[in-house]
Image (cartoon, rainbow, N blue to C red; front, side, top):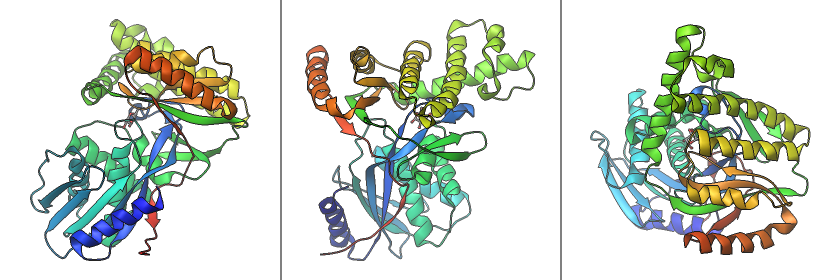
Length: 387
Ligand code: GLA
């Protein structure tokens, strides 16, 4: 995030609360491949990125919490002994974290916070996980709780599951906490451990194309997909008792499922898990073409079998299919809007951008935004300097 914005957030904190805060930078994430596999105990391949939220936080010796969102210019206050959902959606990620800390037996005293950032909201880059983890990390620091990275990731996921009501897996919070500059995180969601993967993309780079749409279905349909996978596992277990999640399944086990929708959901997850393992090998041995093909297969499955894409995402992926300088493209994150992730020959980004922007506007009446991605470190404290 640029220095002047960080300064503005810091100044606002002093203006509102007249004290000195700590500052936490908390990044968004990308995911190269492995979508909707995390809550099925499978594999994912995310990374933290150089778009982030900065939170200035300080204890205030009271029993209240005061929040200010710099980007929305909105306030929200609540009492520590009265945690109820707010009309301001963004505040619920923070209240949910406070609730989880309390449920874990920590005494959370009053605090003030001003935060803002450059992670586009609703773009599938996990600004919500950045807010949760950044807050949990900051409070752990101020209250001397010494929470580990995995504790912060799990607690933040629980805040989103229980307080916000989105039954997300662990990928976003994990990538936010464990991200490492220049490295992908190959996360095994069963063991909750990861390997860092170094990649050399040669003359190619990762670019996000933002559809700038966010269809309303997202959270409810996400929870439906999760339940469908659980229903599939139940049916498979009738014959294969050793199975506890789709991670344990092979395609041949799906014969027990008659319902085509359910079968498609399970087939997608089984195939997507295999793509993460194979795709990670492709990247490590420099087979970028092979990886790009898997991105297209992933998108096809997400769109046709898992049905979490939307016309705008499909269109942006479709444009790239005959483009020699794009090796792979797919929708990224939960779906129903947000961004596609693209592996592009850096030299041609500019011409691709102008061509697709015009075509996308012509087809949808909407603007497409495009961002380069650099892989960054996970959540950390950051220095403040009032000059
Ligand atoms: C959202 C969720 C993640 C994950 C992705 C889909 O980002 O928060 O847990 O399930 O969707 O891969």
